Amino acid sequence: MHDVPVDTKLPDTPGQIARSEGLRASPPMFRSRWLDNLSRVHPIVPPLIYMPAIAILAVAGATQLSAGRFLVALVCGYVFWTFCEYWIHRVVFHWEPEDGIGARLHWMMHGVHHDHPNDPLRLVMPPAVSVPLAALFLAIFVLVVGTPLAWPVGAGFLGGYLFYDMLHYALHHHRHPSNAIERRLRELHMRHHFEDDEHGYGISAPWWDLVFGTLSRRSRS
Image (tube, rainbow, N blue to C red):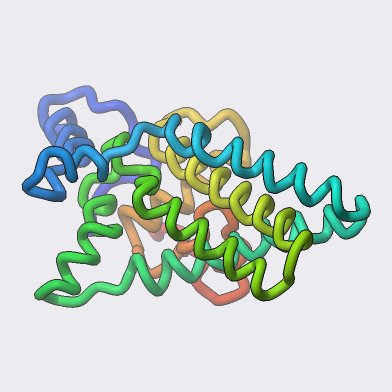
């Protein structure tokens, strides 16, 4: 694990500057410059893609369902996202084979983020990955709950994902949190990065860490 204080501050010495740049500048993920560019995503990209999709799904559900059913489905979709966020992070992103293709896949999915957590272009999921996954989950919702109920469930799910992506970016790049909640979430996430990566899997929804016994423990120092 990286031995870095949880409350990281702007570097003010040559050593700190070098360390900060090392955490920020991630190496190419692919030999092809075109493919590597696809793996680097500006944080404005997810809202541009998902806000229209969320709005379309929400309108489709709201015009076909009662207000009560619509709101319940929306909340259920959001809660299901937070559950998926926790388990995807814990099981998929932190599946860490020692070598071979598995180790390479882990580094591409999540290891590069832990090695270079300050790289602003590797903090949100590339659309080449997130869009197919979103389509897959939406298809599952249609199969499981049917339409039109699947539309608000999908809107809540994608809304939760978008909130997570934007919050994750903010936790890494807003060095001065604006309120106590953001400060606490940043503390928990920095502990996951720099002190104990076997705890603190819920980024936007740390209550799942409480449920499953993986809440980040406070440093003894």
